[in-house]
Amino acid sequence: MEDVFISSGMRSALGDFGGSLKGVKFTELASQVARASIDKGGIEPGAVDHIVFTTTCPTDKDSLFSARVVGMKAGLPEEAAALDVSRACASGLQAIISAGQQLQGGQSQLALAAGAEMFSRAPYAVTTSRWGNPRGNQELEDILEWCYRCPFSLEYMGDTAENLAEKYQYGREEMEEYAVASQERALAAISSGFLAKQIVPVKVAEGKTTRIFEVDEAPRQGITMERLGKLRPAFQEGGKVTAGNSSGVTDGAAAILVGTRDGFDQRGVCPEARVVDWVAVGVPPRIMGHGPVPAITSLLDRTRLTIEEIDYFEINEAFAVVNLHAEKQLGIPRDRHNLYGGGISVGHPPGVTGLRMAINGVQHLKETKGRFAVLSMCLGAGQGLAMLIENVDP
Image (cartoon, rainbow, N blue to C red; front, side):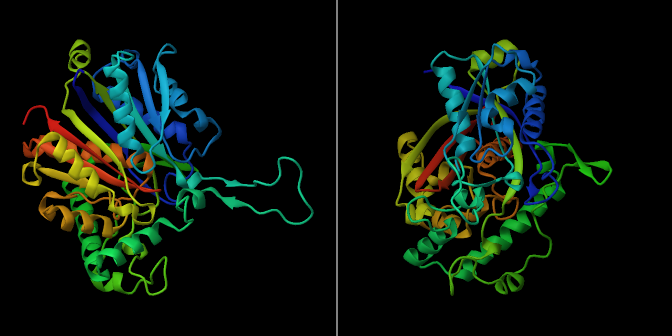
């Protein structure tokens, strides 16, 4: 099997729920970001022969065929193939994995892995009307309720975070300490310009005019332990999980080029990181936040590496307890973990998060001359996924 490399990742700024991106069509945003990644690679769109696209919640009419539509709107030729994939919260990483599998199987020479999530545009559904309405009012069902509930217990994902906190006895105060750090790190990454290097400016409507949207909208100034302590539990009476220590609902898009060394070299694209290996595991759905622990453990076992040999960990902040759990169970030091914020601060659009994390990991390794980064997350319905990437030029 040939090695798989990634390069030239770009993303939009992430918009708050009901915020700056609510009026932007799904495929319009995704295709702009996809084209920006291609342009960053210094190639023409015709050089890409396969797009692998992901979303967990199609929200516009043409997003049901999102891979094909986004690819062609980004300039890929009609001859290019298109594949839609989904693996819940790890969908962005799965797009990279599936693109790499196409390359290794000889079905592709150079691919684009991309994803988008536009939860602000999520529709409502009437599920009782196709064959005629019974007498009386009909219920509108919020599609986002489908996205945020466990398909087995019908608990909210936040309830599963409560289950994890209860099982392993994590306290609310330590969750909120982590949440404050996430906000501070995201704001610092904005101020330093770290995040600006990966963001595609997007025009958004503002009244009768337009403006440029290019800064993540969700991070909050002035978040303190005192402010978080005043929030009510979001899911269970007397619980520990609040809106302040949970991931935010956001919109956005991201993309990255995926190729073999020969595929990149023949097209003049500079590979930035090698996808060394990846692991997906199942865990009990009621404690889905446990997922990163066995996934990272298995990944390190497969690659014969230790925690100490990993320069950087990016673990999705679905809930602060997920990251606390990974730190404590695996011995991950906080000074090598989510240094640029995460789901709690910048937000967690599932079709984008894995790609955003990969872009962060590549950029961190390049700027710090590190060698290895681990990207990991828990998945709704009870899974964990972890990917190891290696800096091409440490």
